[in-house]
Length: 335
Image 1 (cartoon, rainbow, N blue to C red):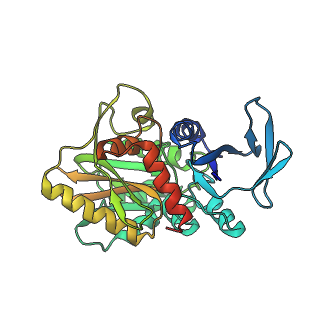
Image 2: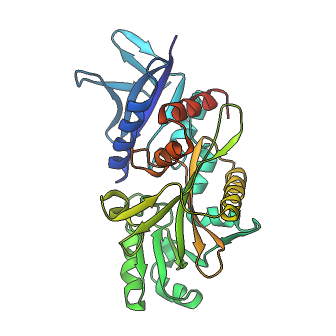
């Protein structure tokens, strides 16, 4: 009998459009000989499965079951490919924990924590050889005095970003003091990001993104790194999703020591944050010092054919089909 997989997509934020692209690619790669896959769309308007005739069938939130063709479909595992809330911030994971449905991503606590960039940095602050850009975390109550608080503690240029956002939505690089107020307002007002803003000092370095996952045997596997080179001011939403604006080099040109250090630190980050499934760590190697600067962790990274993780999977010698099977089987085993 095939394993019934609920492939979760959609979401409550602007990142939903990326979720749909990611989930379509994952759906195309999943082994249909092993898995009976249902694409489940979770939106503010409702949770539903749309069949081949475009008929929508509502998910029963009591137990996440689906009444379809006269039968009740109960899923064996949820494969979460939902960027932003509620799939990346722990809300959906908490619900699945309550009804006893295994899932492929990090736990509710880890997902919630890692959506908060400032809190994540605090947890990682004492890892040897891991460096963190100097930063200020602002809450809504700081909005009026935000400019003063930043200028007292940080030196230009700054990166200003929603503390709980993704896909670089609401993010600005500030090179002159006159632009800080507008950048703070943009970040505070980014939709569904909690009205918290993280401001960091700029790190001048090469930018990388590198995936890691736990396989069905319980082993941590770090994928080859991708170096990101963009013609934009920084790797913003347009650079991420507009063809031709970014060069992505996989595997990245890193020497043996840099590769070994990155693997060691990424594993430590994964363990320290109690991650599960696949995650992606973004980091800089500072030009003058070669220090490893943590940028952020993404617990549900993009999965389009051009996304970093699929690139890295292919570079490692695996197929996406085999990789996604590993994630499902690891989730079923409780890893």
